[in-house]
Amino acid sequence: MPPASLKPSDATGVLPATDSRANEPAAHSNGKLPFCPPKTCLYYSGDFDSNNPHSNGLFNLGNGGGFWEVFVGVKPTESVVVTGATFNELSSNSQVGLNSTPFGVNVNMSSGNGGTFWCSTHGTVTMAAYGESYYGYTQYSYTIKKLSKACKLKKGTVYFVTLVPEYTDGSTIAYLLDVEDKPAPNHRGWKNVLDDSFYLAPAFGAEYEPTWGNSGACNGIGCDGFSIALTGKKTQ
Image 1 (spheres, rainbow, N blue to C red):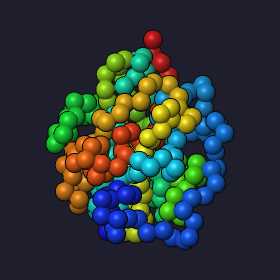
Image 2 (image 1 turned 90 degrees about the vertical axis):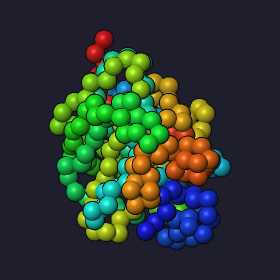
Image 3 (image 1 turned 120 degrees about the horizontal axis):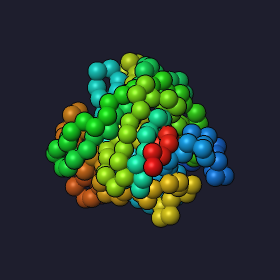
Image 4 (image 1 turned 180 degrees about the vertical axis):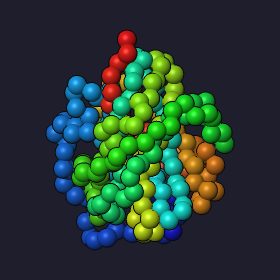
């Protein structure tokens, strides 16, 4: 099994590269966001930057009966209806797995506490290369353009959103990439919520474990925020 994070504290467990390239050229680093167009882009936390010494990522995937899930904290500055979402992940597979793909929103999460469901939905996911790759693996935007049911979010409330690519091959790996730069490249919309995301991964012994901090899921290396986008419309 691959390590929970890209950079575990035990360097021998780091994700192995598929070739000698440490990084690859950015596919979309010029400010254009194909997954968050201006008319519907509510929020984009920003691009992953491998040159930041705190850059990292967490295994975020459903595969072969196993389930590894990152819940990312967001805080809208206006009330909105979310109709689509994107999670930027480093992946070993260039093909979409199972569809429909789940998307969910929780509230009132804390360390060891999954909180309560606010919205549970799904949609057809597509994937496209985006940004720089890392460890020889390509970064992809996993995007649900239209959720089967829209999710209403209230102004000023912290929500925890999750999107999990699903496969059945037992071999695909996928890491949700973090955002550590301040300011974050290509950021859009609301201010990023830092140090308020959680990890559910029974295989790693993580039961709604904080992603940040020395005792967090990423062993004190990054994971303060993650590269995600939400699309939809304002309701006020």
